[in-house]
Image (cartoon, rainbow, N blue to C red; front, side, top):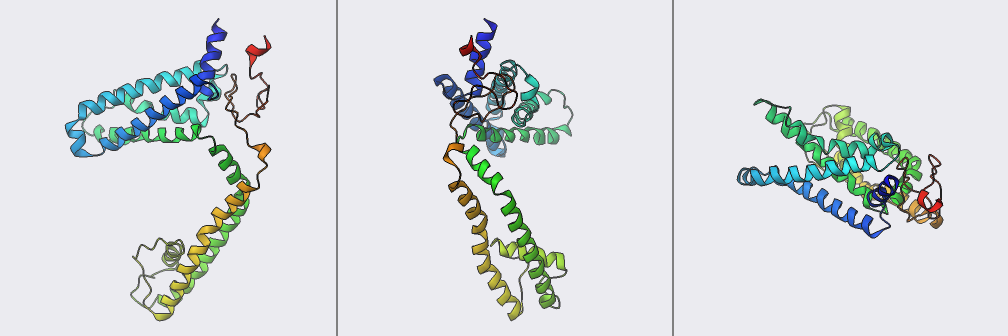
Length: 276
């Protein structure tokens, strides 16, 4: 009997193929968004001052619900440490403890520290990625493109170093802000990425001409990483894209093939009840 309710709980919490699983994900998403909204409203002094009781009560309710979810995830798998020390397990823990830490942090100076600790609730937004199915395919495309993107970034760094050094030679005698090569490289990066803070600007005609070339060049360079990832995503084998949200009941590993019977990480049966 215990095995049945644990399996059912695991199916609801870790999977989204069933109606209960989808409902759980939707409710959890609403709670995450509500918690983030509370963090934002709490940073508005006027609102926080008038509605402090509401904010504290709402945050405690959400914290308790997330605490129950955290322990439910631990209970529903055979190897709890696999979840506790996983990326999302750590994120879940960090996003839950700030309210409980408020019991142990006392004194007037601790109020500032407490405010900083409460910002850890922002980590809950990272949990949103767990429920976006296409994020796995995007991450796979990014991983496949990492070498090309790495080479491209290295090329950009070399280009900015050269351009920054050239601008230092041209503008160092003027009061334009190019006081050193590192500062000139900083200007080249800001200009090439089309950010343009305006804190440093060339004064000589030659420097302004080179700056114009860098600005135009920046528009084409920005599109390169997007093109690399898009091309990789478009050429991905359609057979590699799986819609299976099933999670291993033993180690909580996800990303199995649609017709998989065993976990590719620990080898456990994915649907033990079907084999009984």
